[in-house]
Image (cartoon, rainbow, N blue to C red; front, top):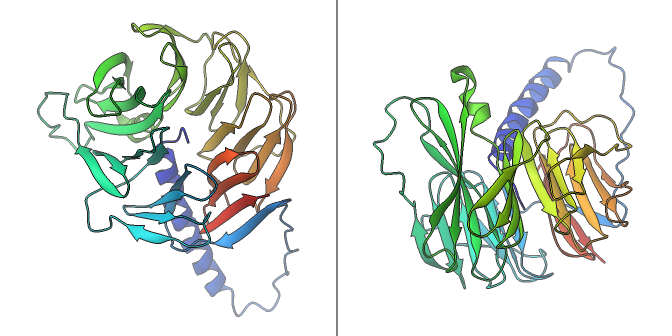
Length: 357
């Protein structure tokens, strides 16, 4: 949840690293003086680690402890009705978009599939709406720069939802656009537009970050790469946080005032609605990774994944303890929970972590 294009980059980079390690291993087969490394002992606690049914899983979303979906890179969906024991492909013969980034199930049991240029809405395994939402009304960029990219989707109620678009124009001005729907995604209107000048040599990095969380239609937060925009009223009343970040990946508000945010290196908390954030000291090694994820079950219990760790809080974020620790070269790229007893995570080495108490 509250994810973005960063996972796709992390997945690609992991494949490159694994290829390099394989080649190095092959070149050292005849070296009789190799030192056998000490085996790493994973910490899993109550989680089970199982081989994923397919390679390339990039996102996972459950509506309850039995029914859920996962998405493949670069495209494809599968569904489970028994909590992940068995999966079956769905809609593989339909266009649900390439480079899928995010899956989201709202309270009306609609599945939203966010891909590079396509937003697909699915109900009962049938596509109800499939649109590229061409609202930009501008000729396609003739350079190699991507003109726009859908990023993240979130619903504050059954029918009120939000979609972020990262729009990189020929002038190298980055437009973060927030679209709002009041009819379950059938129609969308522009809300927030935020401009940022982009270094032409760093457009790939600049175009890859976004996150959304809304408590209700009047109160929410949108990650804008290095800052957070705060919504204080439905009628497009926005302000910017005073704090600066390094590429926001996830946001979660447990109340109007208490908001957690994560970037690619740290976890932060605000007690004044997002105006100011303070970094949380975590008792883990520094994680040099490209993605983190954050989710709360209620105002006390929450989970935060970064690098090879999943951390848990049971006191509203005042303290965090290690729930899962994998080998340092295996990263957590997604977590998803439906309640405190049922959760799932995806790893960069083709495994699923399952919490089923």
